[in-house]
Amino acid sequence: MASSPIIPWPVEPEDALPLALWDAAAIAAAVGGVASGDFQVSGVEIDSRDVIAGDLFFALKGEATDGHRFLDGAFARGAAAAVVDRPIDRPHVLVKDTSRALELLGKASRDRALGKIIGVTGSVGKTGVKEALFAALDRSSRGLAHRSVKSYNNHVGVPLSLSRMPARSKFGIFEMGMNHAGEIAALTAQVRPHVAVITTIAPAHIENLGSEEAIAEAKAEIFGGLEPGGVAIIPADSPHFARLKEAAQRHAGAVVSFGRAAHADVRLLDAVTAPGGGSLVTAEMRDPVRGDRRLCYTIDALGEHWVTNSLAVMAAVRAVGGDLGAAGLALAEMEGLAGRGARVEIPAKGGKALLIDESYNANPASMRATLAQLGQTRAARRIVVLGAMKELGDFAPGLHAALAEPIAAAGVDYAVLVGDEMQALADELGKSGAATLGKAIPFAHCRTPAEAQAALAEFGVENGDAILVKGSNSVGLGSLVAVLTGK
Image 1 (cartoon, rainbow, N blue to C red):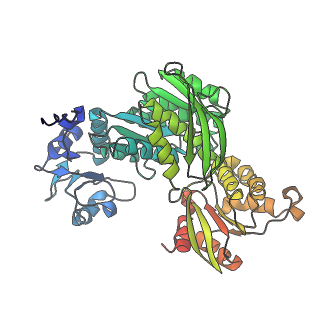
Image 2: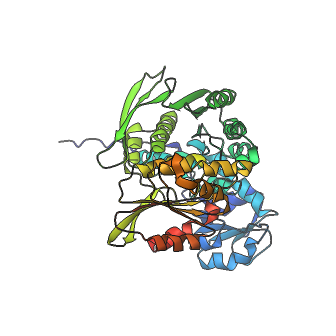
Image 3: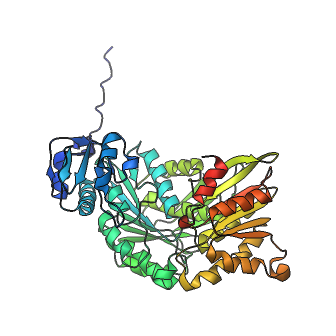
């Protein structure tokens, strides 16, 4: 009996691309430098402490330090080569300006990319949405998705993340952040996304921009970098929807909205608590070309904000031709990120307590969302350690004081407030009788995380307690989390 013919494995365009991330010739050509010899690298790093074997180390110069001082440490950790502005006796590429060289290597990476690129920004939720998109697209592409790690979303982090993207990547997801107008415009010009997502607009960085309208305009700069025919994805429920849509239409081939609003293209129909926690979501996806469809999926991450975030994820996955089924599976398995919603059991008197780690960032919108999530968490007592929200300018006192209402609504039993800006909230919680809050909420106002740790120890953490730790990263509440988790 004749055997069945073997079907040849399909040939993909990226099969002709090199396996190494970069070689010496490609780096030198990209950055306009001179290579000391032949070498290959498998990664790119700017912090000598994070270098692993095979990395290319960029010796960047900053205001406070010079990366050339750490070359010995980088090579001791296994760096294969370095980009430097002076000759060294190790494998290197010599350039005039190492920071500019990093930008140029990122540009070269974007120029050679064959995959679909997604850019994500927003006042709240951009890191979570970026991670969810990566999980969804990496699953469906069998490991050929790439994303910016951590919150590498600024003028250094974006070109670094681009330079790390393998040429064979089928998808690239990049986060873009900003503190001032014009910053997103510069970043999106580097990323050149096929799909640009704005998660939401909230008064983060309002000190520098002056109004939410100005924040919306600054976030909408992301659409300026869209590739021809690109897709803009915007929040339908935002009071700035019309402004965002108008900005998107100037650059996008299509504008897709998501949310609860009746006009949303990816519209939430229902969300209920899933049996194992999280949410069971039913959504409708409108498409005049391919036809409407209904989706039902589970989100493991807790909170109403994640229900909305998931709609943005689904919209972006569809826009790049990804697998919606794989996206649903990824959302069902995606746990909270360290500093951004991770839930950890910690030792407590009589047993264990639940720690909710939101220590990486905070603004008024995310504070309210996370406090609402705490209110839905079953616990013997609910405790909050809240750090100051930064970059709010003259709006800071009012926005901090306004947290009294969601604290009360969450049923908080004890609050530890950290930072000078929290004085306004302390004053609000300390009002005689606290009649407007329904009950007086015991609290402590501290200057530092160490003082907060002492206040928490004095109050005592007991079995069944739930403790939310949230604040702007510069407050340093990550150190408190490290103590509580023993890490």
